[in-house]
Image (tube, rainbow over all chains, first blue to last red; front, side, top):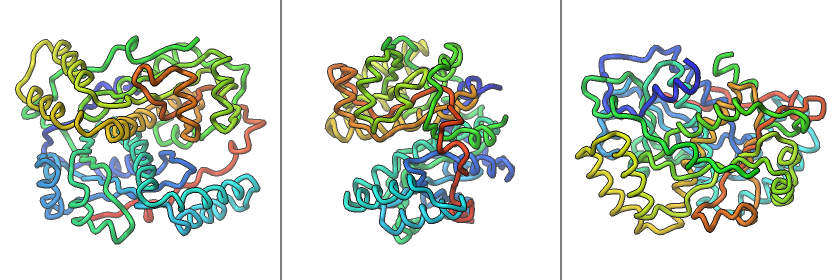
Length: 211
Length: 211
């Protein structure tokens, strides 16, 4: 399957087969794709949690519209963004980049200074919103990666983030939950959405050419 | 190349070869992947502009940190999100989904009512922020799609959105610019970033397992 076929194959799975586990090597490739996703200034301002614990998932389900995929899926991913761009976080990431590349670089150094002067003073709410957007890029990559592995997934924005933050103890780590992504296998016989046509606006209404 | 290889191949290209055009069929496949990207409630709350006009790109460049890729790229994409979730927009999209599927469905109808009661009263700023996040999912898909076509790309968040909105007359269409994505071919001899190692946090610092 090419990418277009994979994107047509995938859908927001509403019912998963609780008896089917995704092989760990597939999960690892999906996580690696997420890890490689780009982010603003390369800061990667989010963590991924992989929840397999059934008790924890049972606690999350009622604060996420009681969706059955949360407990029926094989692996349950949580995208948790930084609650702020702090001076320490920016310095840590730039030090790591410099160490990995084996040398610093004048352009990178002035860029780091610019971020340090600009980001921390904006305050945590502006910074969290910016970090959260980066997690959405990673979600886009994750959805493709799952489809490439023929693994179903259900992107979920509809949940009570404060409750999920509590259940997963995210705030004490400086994180806030942004997106949920159950991974598993569709239970096609019991999923109302599986056979409904995927609908998108036609190209001519979606794309404007400025020639 | 598999997805992981493609994600390692791609990078935020800093210098493109202005003499090389991306074949239109590749651009079309990238646009089709973007069109197929999922969004919250399937509303697709953004448009894509494909700017090839050199005068328009020359106007955008100074309000986007003077990045040379804006004028040197082959095709210049702008992701422009809805400025609001209006009643009319929600109804139009749900009517379209129903028409495409040939029948309505009780679940979809109650979902539509819920969105109509919840989204428009939140106000344009909350709704725009939510719509903008959806464009980031599409950006993630676009970056993979470009890499699959061996087309280079440069995701750009750093620009003056009001100025770009003016240049492209977006506000009168109810749109606000969110992301820029030049597509083209790397000028490897003149790109300072092309040979620098891609740095990401190691898996063990990026992923937490809750078993």
